[in-house]
Image: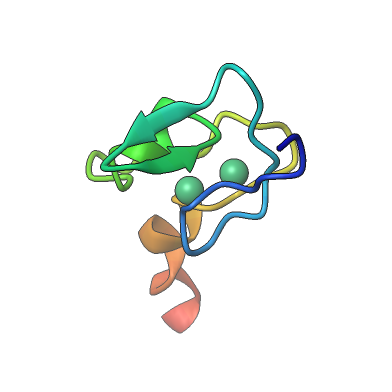
Length: 61
Ligand SMILES: [Zn+2]
Ligand SMILES: [Zn+2]
């Protein structure tokens, strides 16, 4: 049960005993567990899920 990954659709981070559990699903961090509603990026180093939602239109200029 140690190879479980974050339930966030854009996140492949592994979750451990510190996982945030919401609705029966395990997320790697609180930002993912909340669905990045506040634009909060994933707290796991090297993971940028959540951030991409904020900059997806930035390169249109
Ligand atoms: Zn992540
Ligand atoms: Zn996420």
